[in-house]
Length: 164
Image (tube, rainbow, N blue to C red; front, side, top):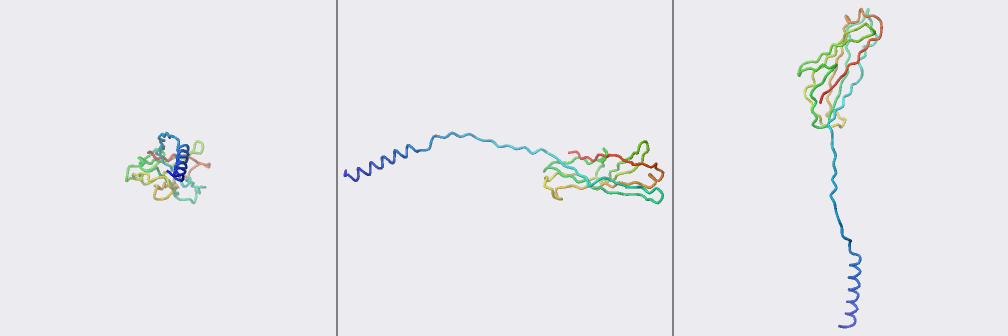
């Protein structure tokens, strides 16, 4: 072996021992589990309250006001019923809630009608019209129900609910 071969062998041996000294350390691994749960939920909103305003008992007429109930649900969540004042309508019937506003001991009858919205299964909570169901609530106050009413502010709170 000549001198240059020995020199090359020596350099190779040094390089090999340096590589071994800097080799990757042994490793250990474990599995990480990532989870999430989406719970079923629905939201319900009303476009406002029913406000018949100041009633003209002399020259007034039958009054009608409309409020829209809008709801939506998480994907695949089925709404089983829509109720006003605890009253549900059977599809395809109209619902009819007979209410009674009060001012002290005085009362005034009115009705809220709606068309049964039928079945609805949620498409998701993205706020777009395609994911929502709207139901018009039509409140009616005939003049005959207020023309002999005592003065006062009449009110009643009515629950609008969806079951899912």
